[in-house]
Length: 154
Ligand code: CMX
Ligand code: CO
Image (cartoon, rainbow, N blue to C red; front, side, top):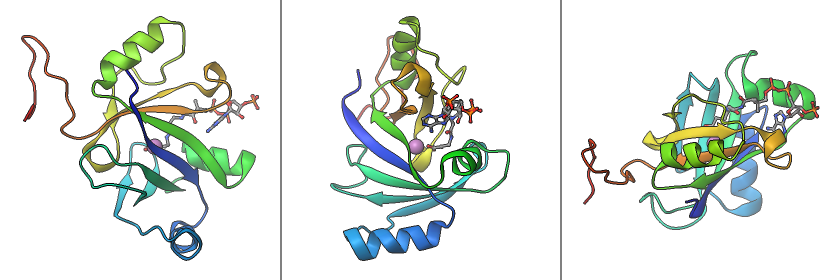
């Protein structure tokens, strides 16, 4: 059900300075930027390979936009560094239901809005070997379902 690595989330205090570091040291450019108010972050996506077709892998730099956000809490507790890993799936709700059914805590009742028009949900790090885990359904990657409302199956 999880078919690829969509992105690795990296918490930082200063998004612009960290993006510059990844440009200078690794040669990755910021290919997308947005603020996700619900998650309380400003995000920069640095595409590592491919094109923005729902199959590429990214680094996701995260800077908190408010103190009562998960990334602000993480930075206060652990400092800068890898915050989560995100796996791509063609059906995030189905993947969450299956994984949740196996006893892993799914942190959202239903998928939420993620970067670049994606749908996302999170699995508790304590149920995933200490790794905060995100499931991502890229924009336009819906699995057609019988009788369901499917978007753009090509
Ligand atoms: N990775 C691994 N472990 C983590 C963690 C992380 N990112 N965040 C917290 N933990 C651990 C803590 O170390 C702590 O462990 P110990 O008790 O052993 O010390 C435990 O989890 C509880 O930590 P906490 O600081 O009390 O954190 P909360 O329980 O309040 O929140 C979590 C943790 C995962 C439930 C919360 O961060 C969350 O809901 N995250 C999902 C949403 C999110 O992270 N959004 C930002 C990214 C948005 C995006 O990717 O688009
Ligand atoms: Co993420």
